[in-house]
Amino acid sequence: MDAGSALHWLALVEHELLLFAGFFFLLGALDEFAMDCAWLWLRFTGRANTPVLRRRDLCGNPLKGRAAVFIPAWQEESVIAHTLRHALAVWPQEELRIYVGTYRNDPATLAAAAHGAGGDHRVRLVVYDRDGPTTKADCLNRLYQALQQDERREGHEARFVLLQDAEDMVDPAGLVLLDRAIGPDEADAQFVQLPVMPVPQRASRWVGSHYCEEFAESHGKAMVVRGALGASLPAAGVSCAFERQMLARIAAGEIGTGAGNGPFDADSLTEDYELGMKVAALGGRSKFLRVRGEDGQLVATRAYFPTRLGPAVRQKARWMHGIALQGWDRLGWTGGAGEWWMRVRDRRGPLSALVLCAGYTLMIVALLVAALDLAGYAVPWQPSALLFAVISLNIASFAWRAFMRFAFTRAEYGWAEGLRAVLRIPVANVIAIMAGYRALFAYSRTLRGEQPRWEKTVHDGHPSRPAMLEPAE
Image 1 (cartoon, helix red, strand yellow):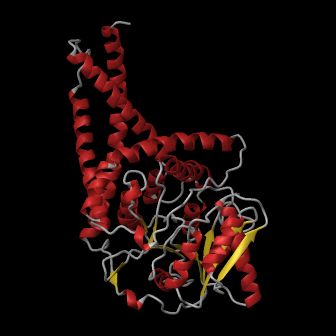
Image 2 (image 1 turned 180 degrees about the horizontal axis):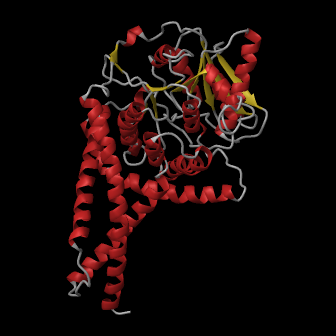
Image 3 (image 1 turned 60 degrees about the vertical axis):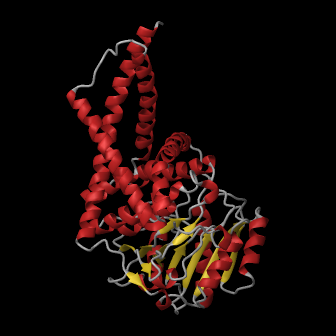
């Protein structure tokens, strides 16, 4: 094939990719712009303002009743002791009970958890009599059963159950804030979600820190708009609390598929996300509680996220598999226009990965076409006025998206991290493409009968170690 023929085919591919990617990029840009406009309107009308509370009015105060914290742990010997020591120190309330779920074939995590508990009677170590890993939901159900046993023995129930992960650093004010917001009455919420704040990592500026801007936007804008629209709120799996009777209703199978041994569906890879949806389906009130202390810091759970490409891809593939693919099958489409909009946003991950892949392929093809054009070969097509308008709109929308990403990241992490967030956009896109590919193949295996497994993320660092914290710049 001579250079002229190659140019002809490359130009044809370029044109088709431009049509495909240009249309779907523009569609996604309109979706994001609508979300931005909704948030700006809420901010302008005062409904998106973040209240400020004095931390001393929250930290350490007695609770209204028993609070049960569930921490499932598989091969978490590097972090679980730090998590427990920190939580027990900043949450001194007698009403607190922490249930740590380990497996019989994971003695290292059990030993580390026992060391972190330090003999504190508020910690209950639950050893699952099965080899791990099963699924996170299955481990959570075992903790739920342990809670039920304690409730029967002691003669009273917990007020709420709080989910945390083994690597989390909880906020000292978080427990009392949840205790005040949650309850069985009409004025109370039956599900409350606090923000999650990934901690920037000097050793992983590109992969580990790219979660900062994603959660800054999601928990600074998208969750606020969802709440204002009255759409169901997805649980993040950490910093999410559920009223005890609501969990009992879900465990009894009042909504969707009955969980059997507890409220968490063991067949789901994102049981936390589904649980938030089920609360709304049962008529429960959900609340995203975004509050700052007088120090300007959000009341939020902080954690390190994966620092290497492989673990980050596996984690996001599991989220995409559970939310976008399993969620379509398991939760379907219900509710009004606002609910449908949010579910489309939740499930667009695989399509977004495909469009991003097409976009980066287009960049490579366009460079090749440009090189041949510079070599003196005539390009066989030129963009029409309509296509040129689509390209221009996409460029403008990218600039707007970059600005919004910078703005939300800067608000939580400072100017330097905000600028890095813009530079990390290609990294986040590549991770999304790889995660989409992995999620689709994993989903296809489950369609052939393979059982989902807990493909957990390995955690080595914990933000409660003072030397590891990085202040905003």
